[in-house]
Image (cartoon, rainbow, N blue to C red; front, side, top):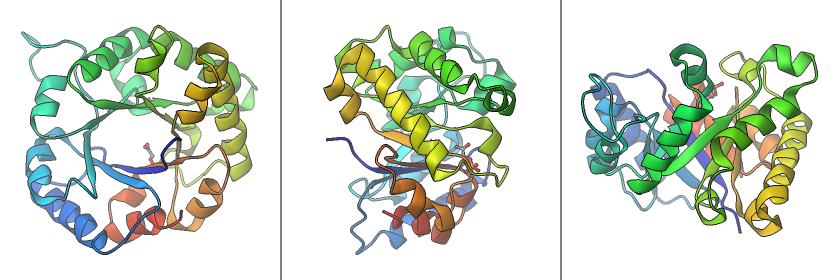
Length: 251
Ligand code: PGA
């Protein structure tokens, strides 16, 4: 069956020293705790190797926040999936709305990134979600379906089964405006139906679908109690060990 997962997305926050300290705090907070979910932190590229050295991989997974859409070569400033994997990281966030919005990522580039992540043994945490206008004009189901179809539905069922999905309504990210637990459940159930139509019920039932967008210790339990919400992708609240742990222990 699918896993429950709580993943932190640190975004462009913390210096190397602050990030290593935060990772140590999260790792220490997990000592002697048996969370009912897998716990992952996705950190800036510059922090990956150092963070990997101070965490217990059996308790805390490590991921990057992006990777390049090319394997190697003359792409100044880019970081490849192979480079990410060589740090010890096991996950990579792909298609985050901030990457789509500010760095022009499209389904075409994301297809390449997903392929390179797989080639290098990384598990993609693949983000989808509508903007406010699409929520308000009622096209949000179509938008999310199209994001999944265009970037992922060329995959074999086996490869699709290795993806973690994160539904992140863009209007809820960093705004303090969380989707209600019913809105999250409605969309997660819809997404699972879209997957079932393409790959069958078993693949759909085994896919972890995380919710992201102003998830906090105060609202996580209600969100995670919904049958199709399998955890969270956590931005702001992942930057302090105690608030992140408040979400981890909400299961
Ligand atoms: P937030 O970010 O928790 O700060 O809203 C979530 C995300 O963008 O992954």
